[in-house]
Structures are given as C-alpha cells and as structure tokens.
Length: 336
Image 1 (cartoon, rainbow, N blue to C red):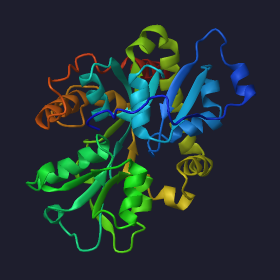
Image 2: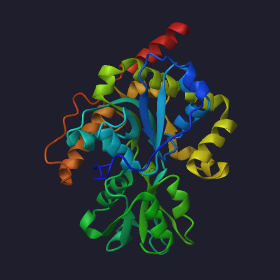
Image 3: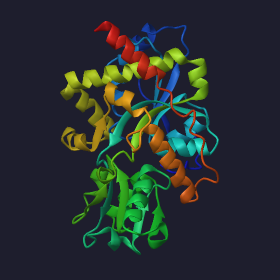
Image 4: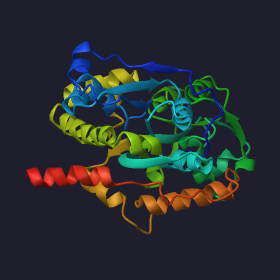
C-alpha cells in the first residue's frame, strides 16, 4: 500500500478468456479498454462480469487481465500498459507520489477483516512481535497494516525483523515455520492459517477505513476513453446487482478465480464490504475521518512522508473524479 515494487510490468500478465460471441456484439467503433485485477475478494466480481457477459451488456470492449502478483498490476498501470486497475487507495497515492497521473473513479470495497496479521503459537500481543521475523510483501496493503498495528502498540519497523516476500511466498514461509508472523490478504489468509496453532493477531477490522479498494484509471484513459470508463463503472454496479440476485452462481465463479472452495470463499464475506452506490457517492465527499477519500488520501500522504517512502507530499488535488458514479446515479434516478 505504501510503494510500488520495481518489477517488470510486462511479466505475469494473463488475459482471461473472452468468447468470440461477446467480442462480436460490442461497439466496434470503441477502442478496447484494458482492465487489470488480482487476488482480492473485492475485485473477483470483475470475473463475474466477464463470464456473465455484463461488459457486453454495456456495449464496451474490455480486455480483462488477471495478475498473479498484485504489485505487477500496479507497475503495469504506472507504466501505462493498461488503462485501469483494481488497487488500494494507499498504493494509488504512492504511485502519484512517484509521478504517476492516476484517478480514482469508483470505490469497490473497504477491507473489514480480510487483511490480517497472523502469528504462530505463543505470540499473543502486538508487543510480542518485538524482535520477531515477520513476512509481508513490501509496499503492499498488508505491510501498511503491519506498520499501523506496530505504531498503535508503540513499536516501530526497527523493532521487528522484516522479511520482504511476495504475498503467496510469505504465507508459504509462515506455514513452513520460516517466520514467526505474516501479514497477508485473503485468499492467502486461508493458506497461512493452516499452520497448527496459528491465529489472527489483528486485522483491517481494527482499523476502519484504512484499506479501501478502487477502480483506478490513467488520466489518459479518462481523456481519450471517457465512454469506456463510464461503461466500466456502470458494469460494476450491474455486477453487484447480479451477485445479489444470483449469489450461488456468482460465488462459484469467484471461488474458482480465487482458487478456493465456495465454503472457504464464504468465509471472506464479512471481511470485505462491497460499497453500494450511495456509499460511493458519500465516500467522494469531504470529511474528517478515513471514510472520506479526500481525508484518507491526505492521511496516506502524511504517512508516506513520516516513514520516508516519499520525499515530498503527493499532490492529491486531482486524484478523485466522481463524475462517472454521479452519472450512473442520475440515470438510475431518471429511470425510477
């Protein structure tokens, strides 16, 4: 959540299957929009949109790209090799701090427990983490969560032995008893908790609003493909409606994409709160706590400075654009 990894943005990209029938029915005059997503419960609905033809229903050509590694998706958006990506607010602020011109157009969800710090048997308090080996993917949301927890307990990053590993490898290292604790997000939490005696020490539930997840697009995409950006936003809300009406089918699709059973996927339900249209509209408004995106972005900017991951405070003045959510809301109101 704090910084963008220096990885080759072209690697680990896989394009999900699209049927020729779907491709044939979209507007051929529109340039395809390239949308990235990775393993997080709040982003798996994009797979539902793909498989149920919901992009097609909005008449938008979408090339949906799955990333095995979350940081690769961020790097690829920063490099301009995709038009849009599913990523956290903190990572977006960090990208802006590094010079990227990106825009948050939609809130997918807030993490309410699906980001966890998981510890081995014998560790019972955050204070017990002092001197321990803790693995996390450096610069991601769970690195941020770990630092928040340490800060609340009066500890700092220098009080632990930080082991930077890709999220899946971090979970595997924990299960293999190579580290004492791990900070991971679902579905990797399921893997980490397979270590006998392991348990959750704290989670994003303890820091409301700290981890919000978004549809983020490049400024160039907004300027050159506004109709496609609008169609992505419209598709998202149509997908939420589909999931509500066809929960069993939707959960089958999302669990398969996550690589877990439907029963395991159902365990994630309370740990991610998908935002309604009304919650989206509210989130873009000024406020005095982390439920306001404007306030949260300022808080993230200050944090980046405090921990030395930004040399100057990121300019978040033009980071948010709620016109697409508002346009959807207006059309929905007119149709009522």
